[in-house]
Image 1 (cartoon, rainbow, N blue to C red):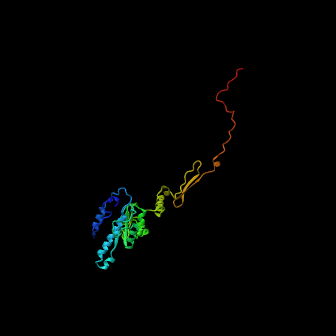
Image 2 (cartoon, rainbow, N blue to C red):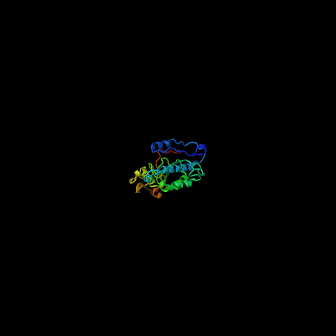
Image 3 (cartoon, rainbow, N blue to C red):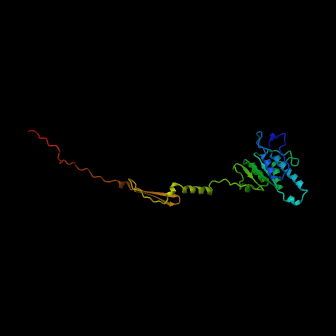
Length: 252
């Protein structure tokens, strides 16, 4: 919640339950609206309220057998889309005056599994996850988000794992390029040696393969001087050819 929730408290609690179905119904009823244009939210107040709830559960279980306390697993999930206000907590009497970094350290000291769900990847959430006892390098090796823009950092449990985004220059891209080159038209004519009919200026053309995915084309062209031939010189005109017309007699 943000400052527009006033005069209502910044955090709210529901009665404890052992029904997972009821827990999912509570999550579905959360309305991510409002904000009044604020860029921060009351995450600090939410942390103090969560720690107070864990303290109340501990007080309730003190009246039971001690072995139940040893087997208890604690989880805290933060669902947010903005960083916290840089203020101290005010609503909790036990944790009043503490900031977010100190509250996160208390999460780690009390072995509370802290997880984060966010539609954005913010640097503050990575730092908050580490301060709460999470192993950030190990969490980043697994992807549980359907959308690559979302951030899911889990601790103490797992969800359906999604494939990581492919990196540039990976082996998969190289295999795709090799498969594409093998299906190209030029790869289908590798190893075929074909001799074409010689024409003017070209003696022969040979197409073959010297290495995988490499096609060599060799052309043999005769020297330009070999294409020139010497023409015979014109002979002198023959003047002894008889004329088809009779010679005209000159009168005497």
